[in-house]
Length: 436
Ligand code: NAP
Image (tube, rainbow, N blue to C red; front, side, top):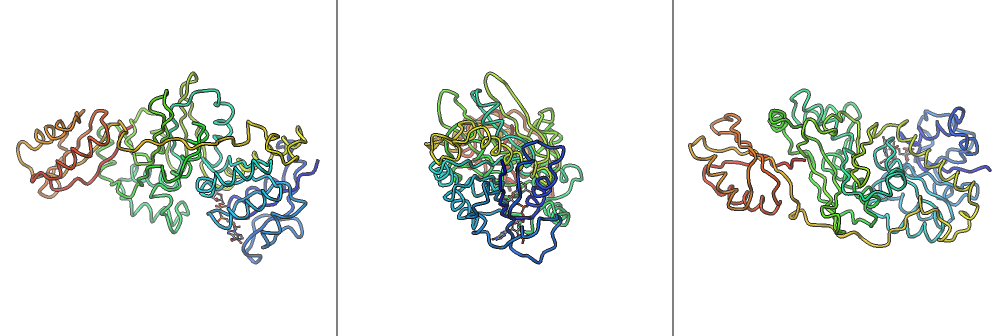
């Protein structure tokens, strides 16, 4: 069987994908049946790192999604449009879709999967989360019989690189961001990475797979890493923690359907497996019953790693086309339930106020007797009990005090904080972070 591939995009991931498709020797035997028919780009004049078959490169992306010789459209453009429109057109033309685009799936997943189910085609997205790390198929298949209680990910390589550099060199955020941009680890516009949006897109996708309901992307609570300072990283280290941008999806009460979804910088205990995930690497920890904990770790981005995930999806579709000719029958019933999307409802999402967690807070106060006692009393007024209170040192004329709470409700903590900010002795609260 010959399966035609239409690539949309020949950038970092598109080039890595074309390289695998054009050198099938020694890889999965089904790759021998795959033919790269077209690769769609913006500019025909750009030098390309891969030798494509004659006539393969085109700027006419609409023709690719309508081409009768293309069976699988592989979307590697990035962003929302024209991706959403091209994916929907390809689906309407009966093409299967493979994509690495978390943004379009997190935002328009419902529309795309509805259309795919009606057309009887697959939309596979292994590369959209964790780059080369297999996590989508494991969640759908190998881990799918477990009752998942929590998924925690370090799923943005740029922010993990920045936080790792800050920890290793005591450097400030702005300096490390500039260096990361010069090295090509951060985009010229770093907003989606450093403000947590990219991680939020990805945890929305993981939550929908782990917990079996659709997720509205805007329901993911999101804080980025711009406010994390070298001082916090250093104080956290003294207390036995490293700071990581975590994306967390959990079901606090396993008997209830409601989920908590959040992305924020987090103090992670040094001995926790996620604490040693450094640089641009990603890791995803899945907790479920009866399995317990599984952690998947690896390269979260890069041409080869991401292309590995893209081509694994292509091979999956080829395998399905082989084993089940009804896949081409354009009927909803023919989709393999292990690979199709069957979500019909939205998961209820809990407000961040209901989160129960430990907090770290750093205060700058007048260096007066009784301030620490006063802090304890004000926290106590709102049922916030303290695990530790440490005066770290003096900054200008102010005492620097770091507080770590026991598990408390976010709403109570915020109320206590409002009261404390009104105290005359408290000059500033430069940072508030949650603790894993
Ligand atoms: P990229 O290097 O910027 O490449 C984008 C490609 O798409 C280029 O070939 C570009 O054409 C083409 N393109 C973009 N917009 C177009 C348009 N409107 N019309 C025609 N062609 C257009 O992007 P990438 O890093 O490969 O990322 C692709 C996707 O993979 C994104 O969704 C990204 O989030 C995802 N992803 C990337 C990585 C990674 O490590 N890079 C990891 C995981 C997931 P020209 O070449 O002519 O400019």
